[in-house]
Image (cartoon, rainbow, N blue to C red; front, side):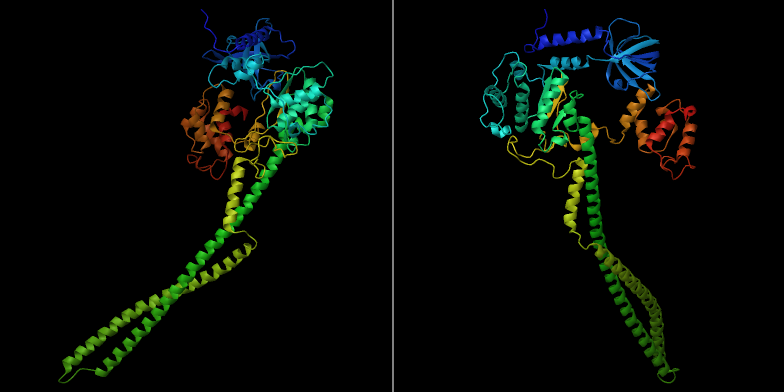
Length: 588
């Protein structure tokens, strides 16, 4: 007995239909798709049901790079198989597929997988009923008459739609707009020429002002462009309009839309414009940060000079006191020597009845003179040292006073250090987050009434609050509008973000079709000394002697070249050392 589905109606029915679409696509001839022939294939690896091949290719389509493709033998009329194709730097194409094409397939053809969108839809439908699935079952049920969506009519229409009272709308059109802005679901029908596009335009305008994100879909590109042109007319005065408030997913078909609003709705043009503005703003902030840091450095240098000057002045005072004390001690020693010398001369040669007593006086006086002369020599030496220290301290005081005077002149007009430090912290935070100060959204009431200032949506989000905006797509192409910080905007634009060892490892394994040790790649990125073991783990076919020779030619940092004394003082990137290890000498 088949297991009963836990998915709500009509998910299983939709899933069956989607799977049939996928199967039909795999069996179709793909006449509308350009096919790329591949030749002289060879299997490079086969693991866990995944086969990797390397083919030659004369005419490659850049649009296929990194996209899901379908593959089958060139003259086959059978079903296509899913595959992944990537063109390598040498012009060959690496093909990965679950289908066994043999060890040396001579000729195959590939084309873009038009069923990729259906597969994504199938995956989302399969997830319905599971935790955290992406489908809102309740609102999906409204489409098939299940549930009780909230209905109503908006009373304050002039709050959400500009010039509501004077708009040329009939009662039915006004009711449609009012009901759409107040209720949870609205079905609008009307024959051609009844103003559906105007109604939809005002619904989108009001939804935007209610701080909602809108995705507009239509069965044809022309229908999308016509509605989008009306939306642009209604929202073109909004502050965020030039920065991607309304975006067109896919190519513009209607010339008038392209001529009037192409630069404002084309995501590539928007991204390029915002990126340039962002880079300029970040450069300006970086300059402001540098100026603030320079001011902080001046404050710190002045503080250090003042502290050094105080120390030098204290040393000068101490040296002067030591000199004066030595002078006093020197004078005292000399007086003592003079007094004892005079006593010795007065006693003369001891004779008579008191000769012994006189001799003792002479001996004591001579001992005092000897001790005083020894002490005088030490005092004289200390005096000279104290004088040298005093003169050195005085010279240091003079130098520091001059330097301090120069630095204090630079402080003229500078804010206080605390103020500069606070500003530098703010600028550093702004730069690290990639956000521009003053463009964040503060507290506000729910919604965005007519006449209020709208934030720029593509610039980023503040405190996790999404920006409102409209994305218009044709058919079932769904490109969600999400708020991104400018840091993520750089990533979306493909701007350099700095290579990582993991990224380089992935590239090497894709390019060379073999495993590469991540620890060896990190060894290179950390600029540690090259060893035979590291070279062997990166590429067993590389000659250690050749790598050493090339490293010497490039000029590697000292830490890399500890084992190569001839290499000193150069600089080489991890990328260049990587290419030295991986590239055969015959191709360099």
